[in-house]
Amino acid sequence: MGNPPKTMGPIALSIGDPAGVGPEIIALAWNVRKQAALAPFFAVGGASVLAAAAQQRGLDMPLRHVSSISEACEVFDECMPVFGAIDSHYSPGKPSEEGARLALASLRGATKLAVGEKVSAIATAPIAKSRLAEIGFTHPGQTEYLARACGLADEQAVMMLAGPQLKAIPLTVHCALSDVPGLITADLIIQRTRIAVAALRRDFGLEQPRIAIAGLNPHAGEGGKFGSEELEIIVPAIAALRSQGIDATGPHPADAMFAPHARGNYDVALCMYHDQALIPVKALDFDQGVNVTLGLPIIRTSPDHGTAFDIAGKNIANAGAMIAAIKMAGDCATRRARQN
Image (cartoon, rainbow, N blue to C red):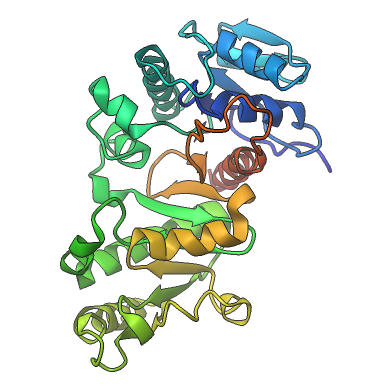
């Protein structure tokens, strides 16, 4: 399938919760590195966890501790590089404090390398937010953590879920559905759309991204009959975006905008809340869905699924989303490198 893309450096992988599927899907990704034309990558910590996960899956994956980023690139073709000595026991399906500490240390290590421009991108394996909260992790998720690590406010990092058939952005993310109407503002729609458009141009090669903006209410409010948010907030925001030269349309009824004939009319759907964006992406592209953070000075991707403790270590986890996340990280890094 061709040679791996050339990037400014390798991709750093955080191992995620070692009791989840992260270690085995990383091992599976390394085993198809050539077929999938993946850029060189390495794991931050978790050597024994990765070795045990590979053995559990029946994979031939030699590991090597590396002391430098350049060494990781040199050995990547023959060995799975691991940078850093942090580790824990491999107990699939049995999350622990020890495992949470490894997950957090790996995330911090990978992020530090990216912020310090030692690597071209990071791809983060799934974490268990509740487990990390027990050891002092105060952020709603990895997206917000990365924003703060880059010196940005939470709202400056935009979550996009991307698969072969659909890209979607939730305007509001981890909040109660009852809170959503009060959180939607024209300024938030404008801000997130502008961040997304800039990132789509820089990292995805879309010179004039087409943004379809969903309505909040059934039938996009039907002229105010089913709610006023469309007329009072969403329509004025779209008008403002269009006045700035951004190709934004809507508000579109969410029950129709994800149909096959509709998806060809836009590049990204901006949705009003979490499930409005994630349900169609996961229905269409679950095994290839990627969570990519837009608006950061670094490149970060992640498989668009969770730790899956219930299937960890049972030899059934699909690595498609992890492979897609690494691939996307490499492709985005290549585009940035060409612009410098």
